[in-house]
Length: 393
Image (tube, rainbow, N blue to C red; front, side, top):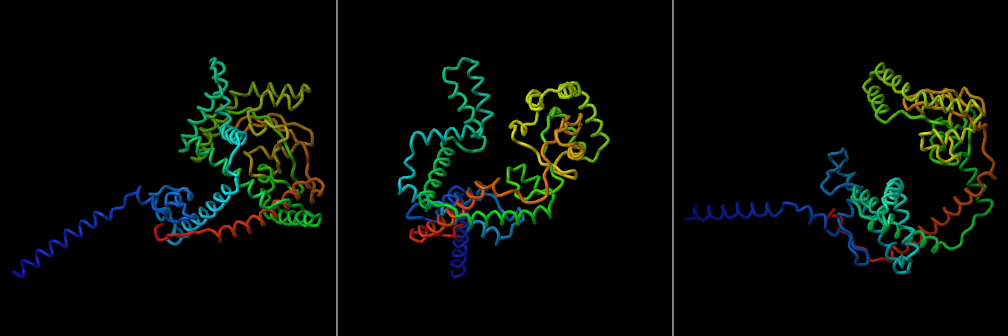
């Protein structure tokens, strides 16, 4: 009797244990919807944390080589950032900065279209040619399709753009009118020079990269010069084939493919060179023949030095042989034919403060605004009613 009773109890325990185990299976949607913090009663979910980290909720970062401690730290940092952002968002709404005007909404919408300018322009042109009564609407529909490929909607991007603009206006309003003194401007200028002199000495490619990204070169060094070039490009499929052959270590095949591809575009490249040799304006010929989108703006130049590794093989070395104002013959590379014109040579030493006075002043002013903003945001954070549930992360 006792034995049977114990057996019955044992079976009951097994059933309950199995039921509990089944009940503990994680429901991904429910897990992602867990509230991991509240800011003045507004919830922040676990899904938002994963979105802020840029990973899917079902991704195990430890499988990517991160330690458990790293993952915990990243989640905490993402949550902290979300809390601060929510504090700021609420303050912007409270002070009326999210009461957007039609003009602000239109500006945000135009900005989104600008992110996909090629798609918008192509669709707009096609709609006009087709006699569309509302070509702008058709162009925006094409942009919306592209946005959807990234997993977003236009409304989500509009909200992001508008809130970002509202926060910038709130920041400027909070900081108030701020100016920079002459001493502050000079000090910032000297700091920039000291930092870049050290960086450029240690890494000769650094000025090239800075120039490409539009960073002001406060401390140019000897041997650097600026060029513009006309690229008569190889077709994409030829460039890809050459690249893949080089990646596979088959230099002979790559060189053969390149020679054949260059031959196919030689006539057009020679035509451009002949026009330059006949005295036609370099920029006019560039406009007619160039395939490098980086050269579209006539103010854009490439910074080069003879040993630079930032450019395709042969480009920098050929450019270094030119004198200021000269253009090259046809320079064949894996990208196509280049006709390079050497423009300005850089001398050793810091540029004059007068050349960058407004940029330096802006840097100082923005830095002072950021300092005020950080203090005020911290005050808002301390005053907010914040609850966190980090164990749910």
